[in-house]
Image 1: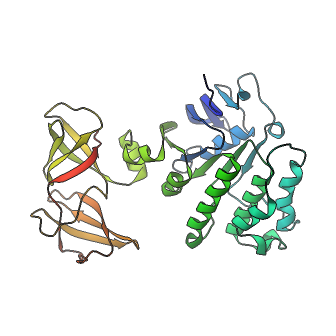
Image 2: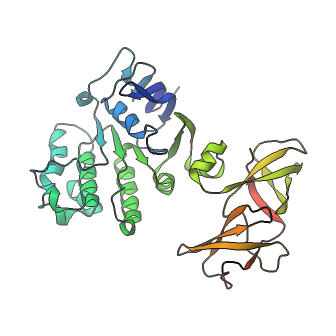
Image 3: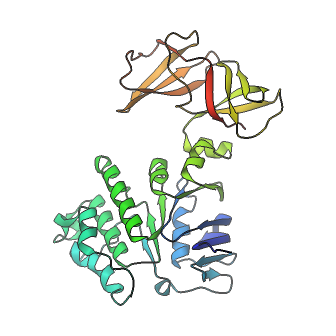
Length: 353
């Protein structure tokens, strides 16, 4: 039986004697994969990274990397012997060294390793930090410092790379480009990575898997596609904030009835008996705009997002429903106007609670 590259089983993650995450289990199946941890502030995401790096001990469960125990009730490998690199969110550069010398410390640390050769110049180019190499940490921005710390961590050639909000200080206009570059680096070098982020879109793009951490536990551990389209609980729906739950009644094998929207058809993810009262997950892409429709809802807000508008529509029951519409559509509805919804409403995957 094939073993996961990283296996975390039944661990209580604690800091200062307080349990942040209880009886947590998750894994990274293949070397080179990326796992993203999503959750609200204070839930214990950074504590997980510190524990895997060996900075915090555990007294329950086990953490294994490539079949070797790093932490358990009886064993605890010291941080310097784990070959795990942790890049903190805050600037961790040495202030009396230039940026270049800070970065080269990573290469020096693992100069003797007989592993794949990581090209220093390529890393510098991909992270776009060549201009800041001769500068000192106090002379560069927070975003540049984050990228320099990331370069240093990559050059240590770790078995496992731990990144705590690695792009939180990067300018929004540059963030997507850096995400693309980071993904390219991690894929090319096959560096197994755990990324802590508060940005769900960032997690969905960078991660092979996502773990949603809520209420002191791992609420969902799955592929990014499944986390978005098939959230497993109301708590995950509310955390992701990518849709709304509306009351409906199951009327058939592939249909529901909503007081506000009428008949909704699609494929149920889970079976519900006829007559069941449920909460239907309605996401912004589920409804289509159609001004010829007799189903009209009031526009209460409109946000321009470049490629699309996000309309907020009010139903007769005062529910507020978000709808995506391409920004090039002919009629851009104003607040207080009526907005037509195409009928019949068809949803590919019906998720209910």
